[in-house]
Length: 267
Ligand code: MN
Image 1 (cartoon, rainbow, N blue to C red):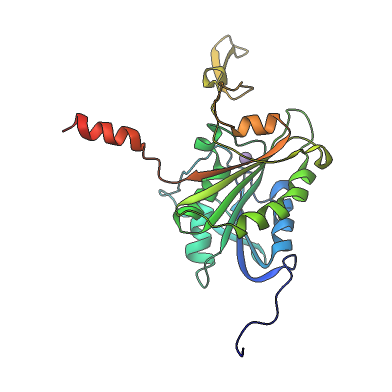
Image 2 (cartoon, protein in one colour):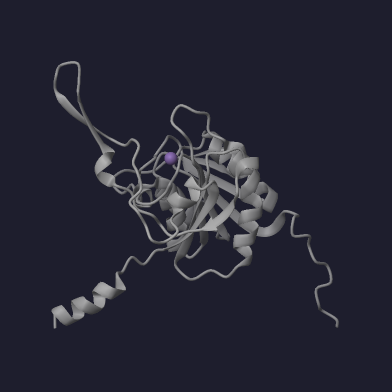
């Protein structure tokens, strides 16, 4: 029939119509964002990078509202912002790309995991959730690392294209985003992809206390933590079992069960 599309683009060819925005929290010069940009360029000819000028890890959703923001154009479609990951995505979508909103926001690849309660403070996940707030499909992607070892960027870079293509083909719920973690293994040792729940760790182990050279106590947040036992397949479990963890997340944090009880309690 006349008018029926006859030319079907190969699923592997870069798409001209898919506009991809890339950001991160490690800063625009990080090797992770460069690897993710190469991945996006396999998927589209319309890839834009708007990312923090300097590292913003653990910046969460913070927005810069008490000073002006500066945007530096480093190259065509590549901009550095002296702000947070959330600032970057907001400025990119509402200002830099105002002619046409992105179809997909990719945040990463982060240098290190974003598992369990990391999600609450992660700047990587925050950049993706800002995309979701603006009604754009968004994914946060992190490469798990071990302290003192070189980050295996090749693992994320090799496995991401196929995974992103598959995730784009499925239907997404509204107000959602996807959190992906690649295990700290060479690509050949990765056992597969596991769909997971957000896990929980024992957060009490997070603070280390010591003394400075003058004998004054100090506290340091961060360091190794172990997982709380979980009944559901968690992101932490998947990574420990040598798999890529893929977790669907929601923006709406309302606790439905408590909401019902609360309505009764408050009459
Ligand atoms: Mn980071």
